Image (cartoon, rainbow over all chains, first blue to last red; front, side):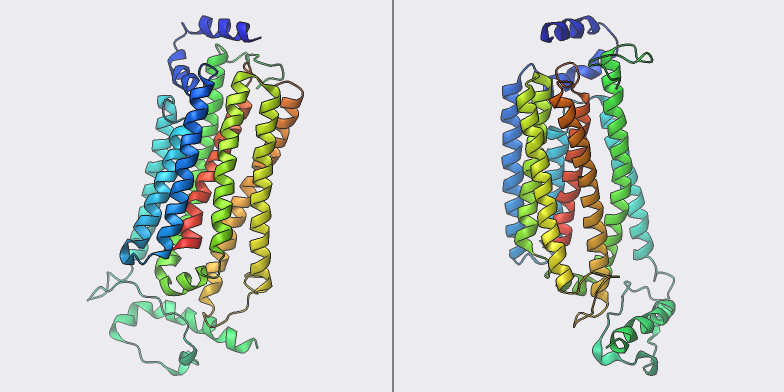
Length: 173
Length: 210
């Protein structure tokens, strides 16, 4: 069985499509299973250490670095899985193309959604960051408190939707 | 893939072209999954920014220890899945079966721990649409839990699909129909499983740690 497989492999080696195969075979193939296992265990340990690091970092007061650290570690972990467990490293150029396409399009879509939310108040004379009014117990009933601040004009539709939301918890019990 | 081991379908020039096509197909499917989860995660992130205070307080209700444990379980299952691929290449049927079953066991463990978490949240009346009752955090917390249940259940659904596919692989391996000439089914399932792992790698800090 194995001998036949190798023979087949060599015969196909002359085909044009083989170069895309070569890297993958080296990474996960039967040629060096021991080295592959060693690499996998190393990556596994690295992932465990990074998990411990991200949990530990969540207990530390990092201020505005809290989110970048958590996301940074997650991206690094994802890269380890992608490059080594999924064999993107040494994979064919087609695989890289697909991953790059996924990355590009995800970035475009998420950026556009973010740009929409970030720029919703920009038409105001003095653009202010978008603020969402949270539910406040003292604020009830909101209908009587009609004192629109100049910056809140753009929030008209949002504010209109808020009262129905804020009344329901009081109404249900 | 055709039913007989290592056979080349008539529309492929050789087995290598066929394998490259199979891998590429899975990568393209995973690309669509990036769009799918990307949209869901982006929704969560925007609400997380808009309702920063309430979301941060609501997230504290989740169990960090259980979330961490589940992360470790899933990372370990990625290692055992990678080992399955190695053994599919070497053709050691017993080890292949062992690693596949270990991966399935870890996957079921993950879902079990997730189930315990979900039950705890149900017991605390935190399931939107089922029994959500606002407390001092107000109704905005419902938005957090809606996102939380949507994201974790979509992820769990992907894991269940992965487990079903692995069940098929176990059957194939048991019958001796996987090996050095036919490892692609194990390989593409591995790609899928690692992707599901990557999704959790992002969900864990976003939901539990921020």
